[in-house]
Each structure stands twice: as C-alpha cells, then as structure tokens.
Length: 303
Image (cartoon, rainbow, N blue to C red; front, top):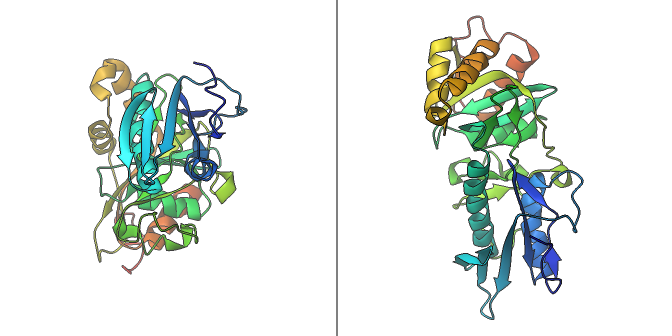
C-alpha cells in the first residue's frame, strides 16, 4: 500500500511488530501524538513519515467525541475514550504481530536485555510478568516485551516486540512513579488497566535481538517471602513448552530450539510479593552474584 491520503493531518512513522509493518493516521493531530507516544517502541529503525506500510489503522473522531478505530477499511471498535482507542489498537497489533511472527517460536512471556544478554520471563496471565518487566526497566534493563516474545529457531535469539507495558490495577501503587503525571479526563483511572509507553522519549530504552542467558518463571503470592528456586532442565522445558504459543506447529525444530534454550540458560522459579526485592534478585543473578546461601532460600522479607 502507499503512504495514504494526504488529507490526514497526522500519521505515525512506520511501525513494526515482529514483521507486521503498519502505521496509524488520523485527522486530529493531538490524538495522533497521544497514540504515537504509546507506540514509539515499535518504530522501525530509519523509517520516516514517507516510508511505505503494509497495513493502515485510521482513527476518526465523531462530533460527539467517540473514536472509530479502523484497520484497512474494517472498523474494529467505536471507542468512547482515547485510552480505549489505544487499547483496541494494541489488542489488534498483538494479534497481528503474533500471526506475522509465527516463523519463530512464540512465548507468552516478557523479555528484557541486560548488556548483551537476554532474560525470558514466561508465565500465565496474572503471574506478574508485566510488573516484573516494568520494575526491571525502571532498574535499567532494556525492554523487549511484556507479553509476547519470539525466539529465532536457527540463531536462538530473542527478538524485541516493544509494545507498551500493560499494567493491571493491582500493580498501580508500585509503578505509580512510571506513569506520566499529566493524565487526561478520558484516560483510565487507578482502578483500571493502563499502559506504560516505552522508548527513548520516556527514557525506557528498547533492546535489540539478543541471546537469552536467564529464564525466570514468576509467581506473585501476596505476603510471600521473595524466593528463588532452581529449575531442572526438564522442569524448565515443560514450563516453556506450556507457555509457547506455537510449540506444536514447529515440531522437532521447536523442541530442538527449546532444548538448546534451557541447556544454555540458568532457569529459576521466582516467588514474589515485593517488586523491589524481586528486581534485585534478578539483577544479582544477571550480575553473577549469588543470591543464596542456597538458591531455594528466601532472598528478602515480604513487603
């Protein structure tokens, strides 16, 4: 497709989520800048306003202030708030990115980068992946994703998919300092899900392709002592296979890539209730500093 109708007042640069190349356009410049602030982490390197795209999202505002979210001419949503429009955008981008990235082994997982090394954080919804990812970004780790991670089958590298970080109401207090101070009247409140933008503009750098060295399987348990427990290669393999979106699709290639991953990485289970303690435990693991008298012992007191 071309660059779109020049009558649109605003368009983002070309954005890319695991080979899903798209851009967003709208007639309202302020709305466009608001949307772009959440999608900056997906900006394709070197892509400017004139770069061609494969798919278009169009946002139009009605006289009543509602926002139609349209992809390639198909309406996805009629949103009442701009925050709802962004949520619909991110939801559809996630769907499309997962489809575009199916040549890779995909995990329901967060990912971070520390120096040249990657950290893979697999787990079910509610396990604390996004909260831990946000805490590690705040501590200086580069961001890869909080929800969908792709592993190259041939080279064993994690590939960034830098969508905004999704924060659930239960994590509002511990991440409050990361949220932008100026919140519009139509933005989500503290008791709703909200999104944290990533990228250089908000001093939350996005990492690049990297080889993972650490697998952390989180579990949030209120009031529990922060605790690390080593996982055997078999335990790690099973956990990652359960959280792989397309493991069966890749057959023996997927099994080989997963086997190589758990052999190469240190794999641990992390039970947490205090985010700062959990972040410090991961930092020390990545730095090669023992967090144990014995890894299975608590590493701090519950907050």
